[in-house]
Amino acid sequence: MVAFWIGAGAALTDLAYILAVWGGLSPLLLRLPWLEPVLFALGALMLGRMGWGAVRGGIAGSFAAPQAGTAPEDRATARPAPRGWWSALLLGIGVTVVNPATITSWISVGGAFVTANLRGLPPLPAIGVMTGIMAGSIAWFGILAAAVGLARASLRRLPWLLRALGTVSGLILFGFALVFAWKALLACPWPLRPR
Image (tube, rainbow, N blue to C red; front, side, top):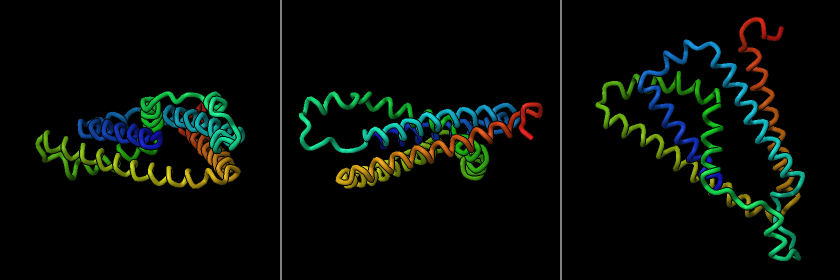
């Protein structure tokens, strides 16, 4: 369910982006030279935080199934209580809002889509098309979350593999965070840019 709500947050953010592009925000965003390095830096921080959580969880084994002989009360205190669906939804929104690739794609590809398909439509049908895009995105994330849930249930029989996957996933996220940080430096105004 957590993966589904993260995906729903991403789909809601995509809807906000397509509404903004439909409303004419693309030309304005292209005129803000400081926006690109800020978005890359925020993306690096978000990915670094997620990577740290995944590495820490993989090393600590919090992704693995509880030991067979562990008492139910011990299992209850071993893991933090879930914060609710809203925190997963907010994580999905946060990750998507600061993702420069998403913003760039909505400014460019989304702008082309809006110009080609939505500009001639009255507002209500255009909003219907955009809501349909969001519904399709949520359906995709639902299918993906179900597949991940099934795979995770199978992997719980192999806790060492689940820990290794968590650690490797965190390291990959760290790698993306470093790439985003480097792109933020490259996008900085001239005096701050590395040589």
